[in-house]
Each structure stands twice: as structure tokens, then as C-alpha cells.
Amino acid sequence: MVGLLRRLIVGSITFILIVFVLFIGFGTLAVLNLPRVVIPFRTFKVLLSHLSNFIGDIIVFCCRIIIYVMHQNSLRIYDENQFDKSEWYIAMSNHQSWADIFIILAAGNFRIPLIKFFMKKELSWIPFIYLANKTLNMPFVSRHSKKEIEENPELRQIDYRNTLDACRRFKRSPSTVFSYAEGTRNNPDKYKAQNPPYKNLLNPKVGGMATAISAIDNIDTLVDFSLIYKTNKRSAWAFLNGDMKDVKVLIKKYKIPAHLKNKNYATDEKYRSDFKTWIESIWEEKDKDIERLKY
Image 1: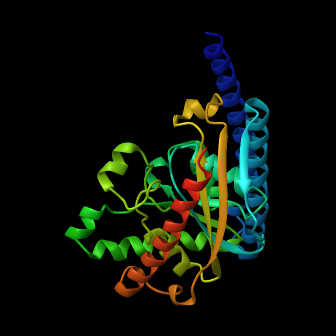
Image 2 (image 1 turned 180 degrees about the horizontal axis):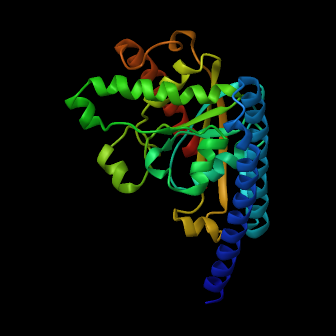
Image 3 (image 1 turned 90 degrees about the vertical axis):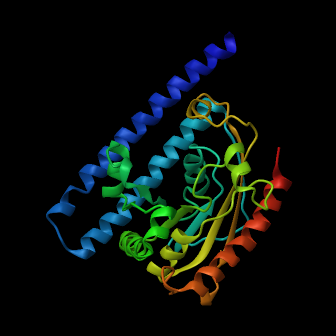
């Protein structure tokens, strides 16, 4: 009973504090970006983008402090890399919980340029997500299903062009463009349905990453996050009340081969095959790393 009450109090206070930080942070971003509507100059928009990214990092840092104080959070980061915050990166991760987003943001905070996500257009009604789109240049994307593309192959090219247009927003300031390679959260049912050749991962999907690399020609490095949770609990409430506090994060980076840049993923079949082979080789190494670092 005492443990249940403690989790209720901790979870409720954590939720209130995080919402407060998001409200103040995105409110500041909204006011800061109002002149964007009336001042069309590119130089001004680039300056705003740099300043907005810095405020975004401050928001993430404040949330990190809240989680650490409320949960005595044990976030162990394994990283021996050198990163340049004036560069652009593409990043990926395994996907197990909605909390992954926060863990990835926290692990990358002030380590690499602000991590930016492709967001589903269907979520644009959520205030914080809408403001992230408008102030932090996190684009909305809408993709057709595999079945729809099989029925009408031209839709692949439409999705490719839409993603290219979305990626151009990242070019205003150094950013880390993020994609969940698995495309969905890993759970026992999905793992069983796919029957992948990995112990800890689903099969990777690479279209989003390949398109981003095509759109942003100065991306030379892939950053890979491997997340390992101590608990099997995966709910939002488990994250807020501290049940998911023990997490390991392994960060690796890989040079993108020259022959995998500046290609059209939608039309170049050989490129699709070569890119998939490269990611799968990283995925095999990642699976072994996760197995080694398990609690």
C-alpha cells in the first residue's frame, strides 16, 4: 500500500512538473518565433532556428533534472565518441516504449545537435507537437501503407517527395534527424509475428533514413542509440512513477559510405538493396551489444 501511494505521488508530481516545463518552454518558443510570420528573410529565420534549438536543449535539460530528482534516475550512458555540434547527423534507435523519446533526448542533450523527429500528421492537434513543428522545424509526414504502395507503386515516389520536402526544414541549423528503424514498438506479439533473425530487435526499415540522407547532403555520420531497460514495464505511468528509472544507453557512430549518399531511394532499386544491407550489418552488431549489456 505504501509503495502504491509513493508511486501515485511521485508520478503525479513528475507529470505536473514536466507539463509546467513544456508549457513555459514552448510558450517562450511560440513568442520568440512570432516575428517569423512578418519577417521573411532567410538569415533571420536561420538565426531564429539556432536560438530555438538552444531553448529546445534547455527544455530537455530541465526535464532531465526533474526525472533525476524525482526518481533518482539511473541513466547510464556508454559513449566514447567525439561529436561536433556544428554538424548534421542522422540517428536511429531500437524502440520499446513511448518513453524512448525522452531517454534518447536526454542521452543526446548537449552532446549532439538537438534531436528532431518526423511526426505523424494525425498528431498535429496536440499543442506541444504542433508547436514543435512550428518552432523547432520538426516536420509532419504522412506515408502510405505497404499495401497501398503495392496497389499503386507511384505512391512510393509521392511519399519520397513529401519526405524530401520535410527534410529541407532541417537544413536551417545543425540538427540530428531521428528515425525509429524498426518503425514500431517491439513487443512479444510483434516479435513473434516477424520472427526476425535477432534476439532483441525487430527487422529494420530504412526508407526514412535513406531519404533524409538524400535530402540533406551534408549528413556524413549515422548515430545509433541502443536502449536497454532493467524492467519489462513499458507504460507511460511506469515511466512517470519511476518504475522505469534504470536504463542503459550505448551510443555508437558510423561513417556513411560515399556510395550510399545522394541517391533516390524511391527509384533506385540497387541503392535500396545496398542501404538495407549496410543497416542490417549495423543491426547485427547492435543486437550483440544489447545482449552483452542486458541487466
